[in-house]
Length: 161
Image 1 (cartoon, rainbow, N blue to C red):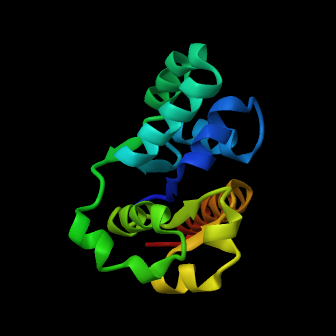
Image 2: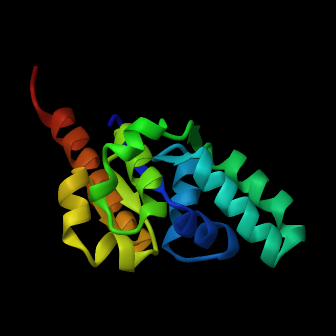
């Protein structure tokens, strides 16, 4: 957890790709400027490409370019054993590999629009040890972190050696 690392699930990444504004897009722009690091798993990329190809096939190329420009870190999916060991972390079995990937990535925050499975159940955050929220929550968290870092830099400038 070196610098405001955020894991995007497919819902957050799609929101950032298809919207010209909004928190998910703002986070992608911050990642492009290397202010934050966005991490995803291979499964997230596959889900995003599959959904975009189904709904707007001509946008797949744009999505790939945006992912490259945003310097998104793509990690391998977790091993089957790692996923099976953590089946009780979240009620929806299809979300377990995403949650495990975020934990293994050692990110600071998991951004999702899937409130039903991730956010509405506080046990998901407790079991995984992750801060979990919508992209807007992640953006507010990033702003707070960047403000803290800026304040610390200013303080160190004025402190004598």
